[in-house]
Image 1 (cartoon, protein in one colour):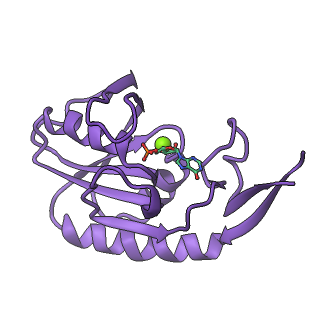
Image 2 (image 1 turned 135 degrees about the vertical axis):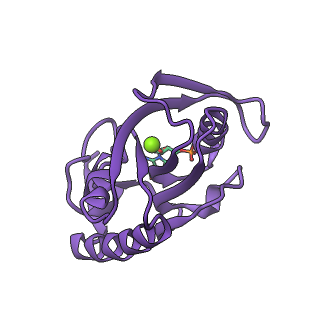
Amino acid sequence: MSEKISKLITEEQIEEKLTQIAGEISERYKGESVTVICVLKGAVMVMVDLVKKLNLPVEMDFMDVSSYGSGTSSSGSLKVNKDLENSIEGKNVLLVEDIIDSGRTLHYLIEYLKKKNPKSLSLFAMLDKPSRREFDIPFDWKGFEIPDEFVVGYGLDYDQKYRNLPYIGILQFD
Ligand code: IMP
Ligand code: MG
């Protein structure tokens, strides 16, 4: 069985979208600073490309989490593999995620972060796969809505591969 990748979103489209969204974020936090939190590892590419375009004082922090729990029940919980390094109490926090699929991970991550009393908490997800959503997630910004396909590249992996592709593609097996 071989793996094939068909391009879905090009480098140019990503670049254009990030320029637009960074402009909106810079406007929203005008005169303030923002702590950008990257959810490892998938959001690394989008986080670094985004912060370079922000016209604001920026702090960066990183988290690595996994979610547990079955089906559509709300009994799942969050496993924090790597926590924030600095306190976010009283700070404007912008959470950056690669893709929202069921929404489970973000649902619990948002609850977790709110308990740390940030001044504000907003969310930017590069990709939205709405067809499989189980938890309602309050987006502030989203990059692209995509169909129910498995995608790789630009931080997203299949078995830890393909994260370094500069574009986003659909992974197919044949
Ligand atoms: P959720 O908790 O179901 O929203 O899952 C979100 C996580 O699953 C993402 O942060 C990704 O790491 C992973 N994921 C979901 N869909 C894809 C995909 O199409 N390609 C690669 N990773 C994915
Ligand atoms: Mg992720």
